[in-house]
Length: 354
Image (cartoon, rainbow, N blue to C red; front, side):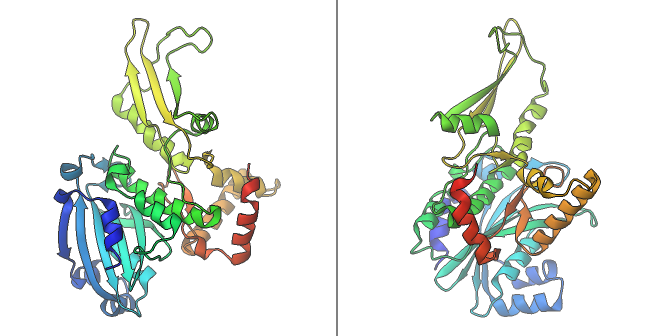
């Protein structure tokens, strides 16, 4: 079974195992909006297996809740396709039908692909979750992976993922899929890192493991002066999520340390180095597109053009928002959707990127 090496790579704790078949009836009732989709499910799926359920009680990672989404568990599923199946569409239907974020392995013969999709509350229907965007790998052979695919598999273990909450954990798989796609351009798989942009990049350049951002200490005299920045603990640690949503690749603080001092409170933000060879950027898509638009347009007209372009790219499954509406994090979903001349130009100019 071509899914076995991928499931083994996850190193799932025994307590998470479910190992139950999912009836097609569940998909037909919850994930198939059209008669054509119902036929795709009936004709294209050989088996859908619910392999594991990752919950706070069995992996020790807290749930995640905000105004846009609620992650109480993460499901791991294996889809076995029939030869004539429409794999990408069936994967999307499964992500829609399951009310939890899903790590989906879709197999067809000796090949397999991995997909993930963040979910949020529907604005139209209360208590219903909808899919933001499906991020899918190019099919590969898990039993005989290429070098970058083997590195991708080695990065998937649950124990290696962020553990702040289930959103961060699931985002870790998103970032690894993005890194696998990027490997087709860069030539090698580089696992995603964590850290705030500037200090993470500087730590990388100086060959350091981490950088530090310090609040409550005078930068010139080095005397403790105290800081009242985000005194509420929940708001303070909520900064991790905000940083992760604004950086590319998505990164955040490794840890936030608070120290009481006779002269005031000191807050230290521990920032790991950026991944080797990958500079971390902040809100890059908007600034880049904004710089390409003519100055005769008003700021509102420019913003509208950017929104329209991103919408078109999303509908064509070229780009997807891996963040939220309020904190977008647009990313390339699959380099196979790019035209060959564009991909060739990217490979040629990658080494000249600033």
